[in-house]
Amino acid sequence: MEDQEKTSEKYYTVFERYVDSMYKIDGYYTIRYDTLIGKWFRYEDGYYHQITIQSIYQIFIEAMLVNGLAESTTKMNYCIKKLEALTQFDGHWDDNSPAIDNVLNGIVNLETRELEDHHPSYMFKYQVRRKYNPAVDRVIPTLYNEVLQCIPNPKQREYFNNFFLHVIHKNFDDEVFLMLYGVKGAGKSTLIQIFTEMYGPQMTSKTGLQKLGGRFGKTDMYDKRINAEPDLPIVDLNPYVISELKKLTGEDGYLEVELKNKDPFKYLISCFLVFGINQLMGFNQDAEKEIDSIMRRVILVECPTMMPKNAEFKKKIRDPEFLDELYSWGVITPPLLMYEPEEEEEWIRQNKELWLLNSDPILRICREEFEYCPPEIIQEESGIEIPLIQSIRIMEVITTVSECLEEEGQIIPKHTDIQTLITRSLKTMKILKNTRHGKNAAYENIVRRAEP
Image (cartoon, rainbow, N blue to C red; front, side, top):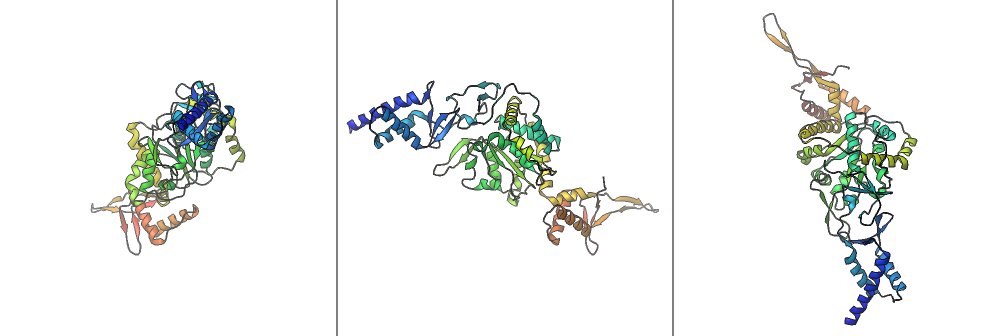
């Protein structure tokens, strides 16, 4: 037994010497074992690529051949186990570091804006496939500015751009996610393409909100920079999805994930969330108490107008020179706070109003078509004041709302349901004071909104 251990140790000494000579640069091993997920990585072209255990076996075989030793499965397993301990790494990769980023031509210091050479001491397992130019023009790139015109609201355009800069700088301090909404063909997917082209398939995932509730729902986001789903279904948010959203936007900085055949573990959040949807979804009854927590985190950006299809335009967005310029401009342009702490209440209020209007087409139509009309006080000759109340017949309101829904291609609820929804909307608008029932049923103090 003692002789066997000595022989195994002899093999390991030879193996370690070979690894030191072939897989070490400036004292840093270029083969590393991630103890968090139990995977091997090898440094090449500026970052660590995941490799199979068969690749490690091959290194052992090469070492034995070079040194004239016979292959042995027992000795190989012994040596590889010791190599694990020698090269082990706790899984805290620099990909999650807000201070540095890895690009094709080096390591970008996001704080000083300087470019350094690649080196195995930088523990990256992904690489942004862009080239950084510290001398890039400080003016916003022309093509990017053209893409932003999909967002007609200047304030929302500013929000989108600021979110983009947060992604470039890996800044999770604001704990926000981006929700693009509006009609189909209005440029939402083009805006999202900016993110997916910038980081490529290796650094992006595509998980929708409803999948967050599954056991492995967050697995695809592990170690990704962007999760972009451009076409969310219109399904009400429930408490579980909201809870996961809060975690994913950095509630405590870490997220628990479960990889298949592995115990669950916590990792530093590194993935920004971007979603696109034609119409904002509602909140189910159990989730209504959580509305404010979502409104604090969401950046709502509307794309309201259909854009002409332009294949050439999308092709330009994929151009490496444009993406290199945009990345470089993003690095030299610091992100701003989405809102100051004292502005949080107003931010929530505005988001709430926007979300409610755009998740409830009947409420939106009622706001566009009808308004409150206070009673006019008429004084009779006797001196008695009589309020003159204007009203609109309920059937007229139902007809107007139904026609608008039909024009928009929306589902028209049945008669009894649509009246209930209209009444609820008018109450939400705080303009419904009284309803007259009977043969000439009408909403009092409500009139059609005057043409602008």
